[in-house]
Length: 226
Ligand code: FES
Ligand code: FES
Image 1 (cartoon, rainbow, N blue to C red):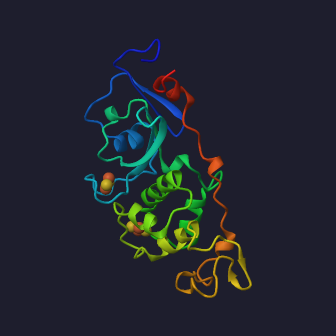
Image 2: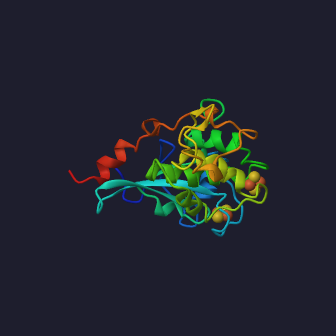
């Protein structure tokens, strides 16, 4: 246990900010805690039973068995805060914003018309963000699998997948030439090229994995064997 801390204290991080709960209520979910206590309303309540994914956030922790930091997505509506000791939670507010800089995932879902009412968008963004943190060059199959727990009532899903296709090898890298995508060869990828009439992938900011927030060093010092 970390020095000078009561064994009853719950300690975790949210978007890089340290949270210490001296009287954690075992009935409190992460979703309620984020929205009511920390004032982070980007994570939404859509069902409260794990089916819609509107409450999706990313949790990171140091796994002693694998000796590495692992990232996984979580339904905040079902995660008791008491299960989060020594973890780092990332919400949609933690990866970018219109006031500072949108994350490429946020930018692409917006510019590809993958957000209509917008209520599902933070959860879909966080499912995609977790995937990207685990594999910087996903396949379309990876992307479709990542959204198995996310529902959208408005878009019909297609524009979301079209926008995120730009993160894959099969999709365009964003450097279109007059002959089309630089990765199209002999028309082999014709069926998966995206329409420039709806959005222009060359406008998309590139993904730079080195710019993601770091895992809190304080947590590493508690969990990593010396
Ligand atoms: S609110 Fe629907 S899965 Fe959490
Ligand atoms: S944009 Fe409305 S639910 Fe997805």
